[in-house]
Image (cartoon, rainbow, N blue to C red):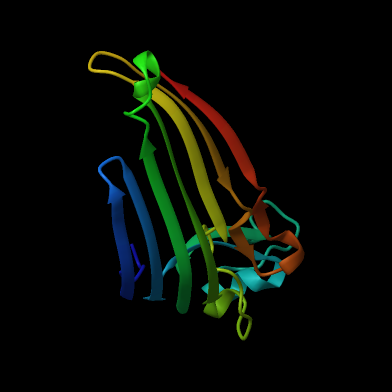
Length: 180
């Protein structure tokens, strides 16, 4: 309840092109400046006093050894590039005319200052991966669709701790989906 609202200024430049009726190509550049973004934070040991909590003394009623809180970061910037494409193969003979392929990829760089949690440090923006993408291959007609997709997300910072050795990082993630 004591968080400030996140605010952002953003600039996007994109270009979409339809070289044929069945082909779509897209590219975009973006930049975003974010103030008061949200952070899963962890204060450890004596650092719990930074948020006004009593520090633990080894007893059940003696304060806190660890405090997990959501707090506002100071400022972050995100810049990147994204690509996408779609191709439908409507000119193929027979049932092959329902084939299609699509995909997208985003590559970005982020920098964030967390403030009270890690003063003076610049970290990646929490909950933001540097590379994200997917690729789909499918077939459809007027009554039926089947699609197989591969999805990728690079590692991302999940929780920032006052002790850098305790930061929690989500490992890269890869998945396959089949939709009917």
